[in-house]
Image 1 (tube, rainbow, N blue to C red):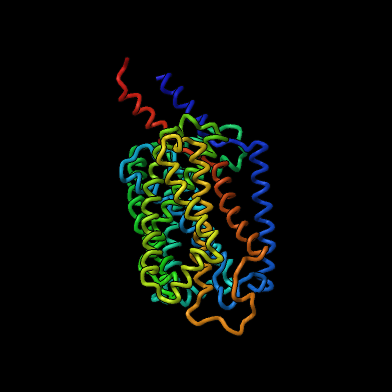
Image 2: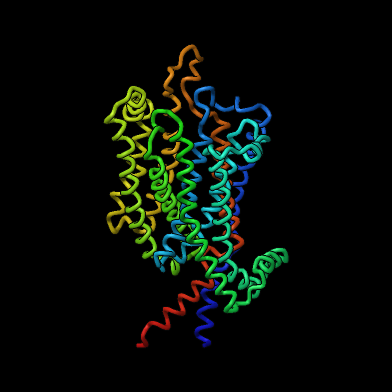
Length: 441
């Protein structure tokens, strides 16, 4: 019994949240600085309107909407790790569930905020709700984003309750406000059998509910594009195309977080080579699915070669967007597929590098979904200023966008400072079960 308690105490010490060192404090300071400057530029945008951006009459959606689609995509990681893998019985997912939910929550929060940033009159946002039209994909987008945020918060919070009680009872040397926070959030948890039954049942229900909502949020987002008669968007393929791409970038986001936390928090005992190998194989599978939809997305319009679709594809394949387009395909999909098929490619450092390629490629992929299409309207551009015929974000747009990305990382950083990155109670239980099933030598 004493050995068992000592083992549990060791796990608790390893996984409890820790104070930031100098590097962590510098990281937070950089993120806060980027957010503060971005907020300054956004206030300037509110005062002077969207004229400070490069968006004009033709390019009415710019980098902000590309960023919104990226945030929606990466938020799908919560349903992938916490729901799909849980329901499929994948026990190895345990150290990754909380990381994935933190990423999902921060991403979906900023997906909602980016929509407000994109509005020229953010004070009119309530009109979307007050004067909602059930026929509009925008109305459904608001509904599914709100629903997905609530379920993601619950999926993050409910499994955290036993760990909150553990920190409430055993975490020493912390400020009084932090102890009160753990006490309030623990909801009087005492590890009673009826409490555990309700908690496990609630988690199971949420894991089932979040899957159709997750598919819905990406399908509805694709409707915003597909229901608009424009070259490049007029496609029935957009729903599964968005979902498969979201699964891919979400998995890459978890891999990047795995490597970062494993390295800086010394979690090699809990995030092992096995986890990287499994996530690498999963990323290969998701990349193959996404590759199929990519081929389908471009092959069908290329076969039909309508005039506007032809101009759009030429611009992507060998026009002004070709360097970016082929860089995204090669570095964001082809190279990851090749590297991850080898065992050495599924080691932590190569996988981290590959995941960064996938994430950066996924962001620019959303840029390519939004911008080139708007440059090829069905009615040709005539008698307009030259600047209206092209779009490249202004410095202020780039900085506001960077601030939203920094804000999402800041939320994850704060959450990891206050709460365990890996579920402590669940890890202890699985460790004890493994010892019980291991035959004595």
